[in-house]
Image (cartoon, rainbow, N blue to C red; front, top):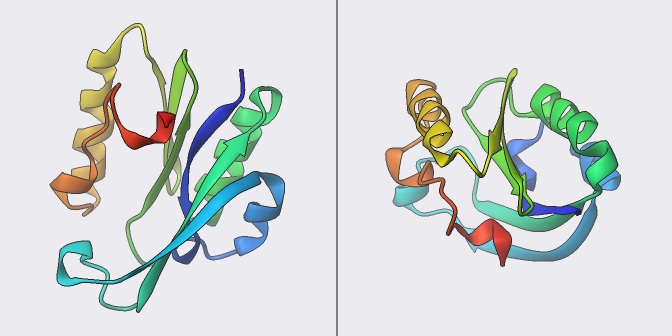
Length: 128
């Protein structure tokens, strides 16, 4: 089963990675103080589909191309696994053991991502 998730275009040093996934929809949000990204004016959120057979390679590609100067993550999941991708660190969460989300949350907070943004879980928006 393919994966669905979100990649924020502005989080990528090299946006060519977006050509490797299927973009299902895009939404532009103006940056607010709550985003904690004052160096940009907007977030372009791409809801993407990733083929199951290349999910590991796409995770590596995203991880290598996330902004070097700021902390970001991207994620996608299907009904079995949830990839949470940081620069140089990838979590592949087995959804049958959601306790593993705690490691991803702790890591995200440790690299400076606001706590409210690392609210990973089985009911998050990447499945819709």
